[in-house]
Length: 377
Image (cartoon, rainbow, N blue to C red):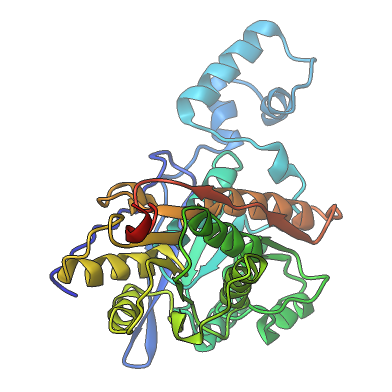
């Protein structure tokens, strides 16, 4: 697959958001930390000294109190603006002794799926003055456990987790330690009281297949994700539901296992093309697998969408860069990160959530990779 280069870009807002990257890298059984911190922010005391006023006066301006002379208020506001001082009403609700650090645990940054969630969290924290500690698990339970041991040695106000598995003893341990947390894109079974943000995977899978059916396809293949993940099972269930509703029998040969990686899309597509009656459309469990589908078709000179229609899942950034641009089911990844952060801030402040589980809708984004099957073209 090395002859099929794909460029992934981690895009940031370009603004300083107080992010502290704490990236564990396994090397000979040990972990090293690589840290990147933003420039030091001015304190209230420094603002007061520069303005020639007392600290309480600066505090009154920050809190919108009226008992400050207009000229003094204007001078302090100007200094605050020039210094880049960030004051957030959200940060006021943090418990006494706050560390000012929010932990974000993710599998890694190889998949743009994750970077979109990170960007949503980053933007939500942008004006709070809080720092974000970003840690990687490499999608395994060992990484989760090592992260938990790490935060036991330092303070954290709360955590946002993208876990390898949904219900985990790690969550019980966070609760035991009194650390508020929110799970994003829960990929396993979660208890009803676990704060989480996810999307409707079953509906997304059904919508994708219904679109292909509307174009006249009947031989529709599905390359799934890991069978251990709830989101993968739900997408397959949506695929099956759409076919059954259309009166089309399920052909087990057209449902192929995958791992949400590019290589599995390539391998399974290559196998599907050897069937006596190959599919006319392929629904990939995620966009990375769809790129593997592209590769297998390209090597066999099978044009998309003239001879094969393709749909992905996620709508990560490069879906509009590849040619033809990929039709896919959009997950609101950025919004998931933003909402998870908002929920966490409420939990840190001791406020109740309206609902512990938030499910966001998915949207089918039609681009250039779907057309009627060759027999109908």
